[in-house]
Structure formats: C-alpha cells, structure tokens
Picture 1: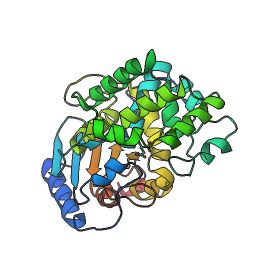
Picture 2: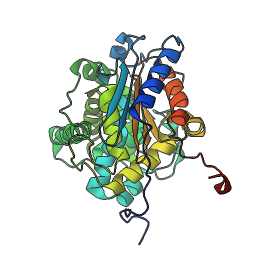
Picture 3: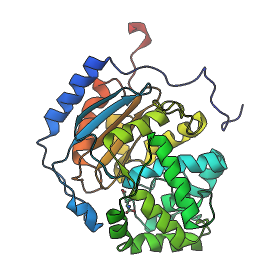
Picture 4: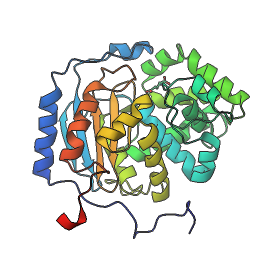
Length: 332
Ligand code: GLU
C-alpha cells in the first residue's frame, strides 16, 4: 500500500458529535457570548463586500448524518469567496489524482498574506498551495473544460453537489471584484510565466472570480464541510461527491493553510482543519464527525472573521472536536 492509496475502513477518524440538546445549548451559548463583539472591519478592497451588514451573525453545526443546528443568520446567503478554494481543490484532486494535484499546485503553507506575490516568487518552482490566491487560481486552471464557460459550469456543478443544492453566482459581487481584480490578474500572468498556470490567465481569473461570488449560507457551508468530514458523501443527498482519499488530502491542506498567515495559531488553538473567506465565512471540519460554519463579516488584519474565530475557539473543545487532545491511557 503506498501513501496515495485510498484509506481503508479500518483506519479512519471516527466519533460523533454530542447529542442534539448539548449541541443546541453550546451553539446558542456561543452566539450569545460573541454577538456583542465589535472587533474587526469589513473587507473593502472588493467594494461590494463593504456593503455587508457588520452585525449579521450566524452559526451552523452539521453532523455527517445531516442533522443541522442553526442559530442567528445561518440561512442568510453571502459570497463564498475563499471558502470555495478547498472544494475546487477537491475537484482537481478528483480529476488529476491527489499526487499530481500536489505536484502542480504545491501544498505548503506560505506564511504570507493570501494574495502575496512574494510567496510565489520565493519558491523556485512557482508553486504555493491551493488555498492562497496564486495556488487557487492555478487550481481553477486545472478544472477540466474547454473555455471559461465550460470550466465555470464544472466548478458551479461541483460546488453545488457539495452543497446539495444548485448554487447561484452573485452578479453584483462578481462585477465588483472583476472591476478591481488587477492583483489576481497579475498573479495569474506571473504564474503562467512560471509554467504554473494551466490555461489562459484571463480565463482562469474570470472563472476564479465567479467561483468566489457563489452564494452560500452558513448552513450550506456546514453541509459542504460535513461532506468533506464524511468520506465525501453528502449527508442529505447521499451522493458520493468526491472520494474519501480526496477528502483526506483537502483536510490536510486546510489544516496547514486555511486561515491565511494565522493558520498556525488557528491550529494551535482550535486543532481542526478550517478555511476562512473575506466575506466573513469560516468553515471548520471535524473528520468523521461533522462541520461548523460561521458567518460574520468583520475581519481581523489577516482577513479572518473575528466572531467566527471566537466561536470556533469556544466550540472546538466543548464539542470534543480538537484533533490533538488526548488523555494518558492509564486514566481511561
Ligand atoms: N475573491 C477574493 C480574492 O481573490 C477571495 C479572497 C479571500 O476570501 O481570501 O481576493
């Protein structure tokens, strides 16, 4: 058995979330504890994102059996932004295999901001990882298809299968980002120069920008995450969206690079794979158990939702999710 083999059923992360009453009371407590938190500010480098309501706040916990617990504005939709990136990477792993996807995109954390040009230039081979902009645009360029429409169709269909419903693009957000997207266009052309972009740069950026404008709610994100947590099977539709082996690799990259340059402190405190986006979403995955998604637009300096991080720091231990907690065997 080599390292890229499909995991066998004997060796998988298992366990369950606490019972419904306990989840409900913890999610409600998290909401009450942090609803007055006033830190952070709205992203404004994409003008449409600065129109968000800073007080909007929603939390959803979904287990791998499809039970969802929601509080606040968990059904309100917002543009998915960077939380699309792990799912597009999953589609690329399915198309190319996880080993080839890693070779072409890289899987190492950059430790630098999400849109860093220097991060790409510091690596001699021009790779980064699929959760920062350069690697994500490269991932989108690896989506099968002929031309932007075909690739976009594949991305939208793929993310819709993860959500278990048809996702739509927010045209206003798309237009707003497309008109202010010079930095991503620059990244795409530089990647092309490194031989690390696999289709026309303008086409890759167009599809990438559309993918970031897909509308989701915290509930959608939690179910998308529960699919990654549950061996690739959507908890409600029962569809095998991607393989269990793909989920394993996607979660690994989320653990090392999901929270921008704060990924280390996130893993240190929360102990789980996660991904944040500049519209205020954070998705956290507990392998085998389920997922927690939060929505609250005000961000810290790295681009991570302030309330979302507080919620996850609160919930991960109380729901028994932190992957790194153990007890001495003699005490069990
Ligand atoms: N569409 C955004 C960008 O490319 C996504 C950034 C993010 O959510 O991190 O700048």
